[in-house]
Image 1 (cartoon, rainbow, N blue to C red):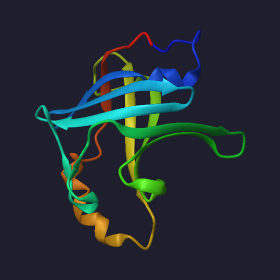
Image 2: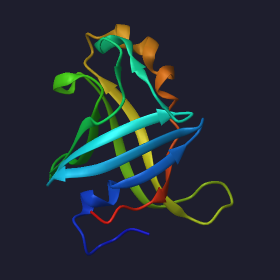
Image 3: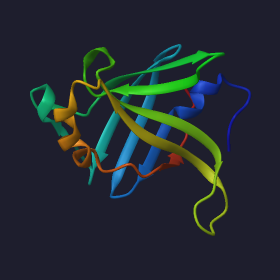
Image 4: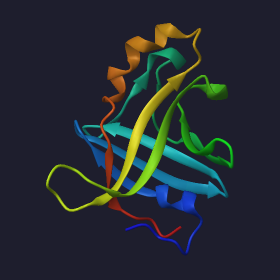
Length: 137
C-alpha cells in the first residue's frame, strides 16, 4: 500500500519482482537520488554498451515538474542516454488478483543511439514489477 506520510518518491524504495525471474532493488542515497540493482535469475546483467558493466548500484533519480509530472529514472548509461523509466502504481490491477503496488517500466534512449534497441530484451522485457519488500529507509 502506498505510504502518504513519506515523500512520494520514497514509494519506489524496496524490493520488486517481475517476469521472467527479474528482481529490482532500489535504495535511497540522499533526497531524490537512489541506487538500483537489476537481477535476472539472481544474477546481474552485463551491459555490453558500457564495457560489460553489471547492473548493480546503477544511479537513479526522481524529478518532478508541474508541467511534465514525475519521473523516476535508472541510468543504464551515463548522462540519461539510455535509461529505465518507472511509474509507481499503488493500486495496480493484475488480471483477477487484488490490486497491488507495482512499478510500470519503460525504456528510453537518445534517438541517435538506435543500436541500443538490440539490448532491450537483455533487460528482461517491459513487464511490470510487483513489490515484495518495503525498505524503511
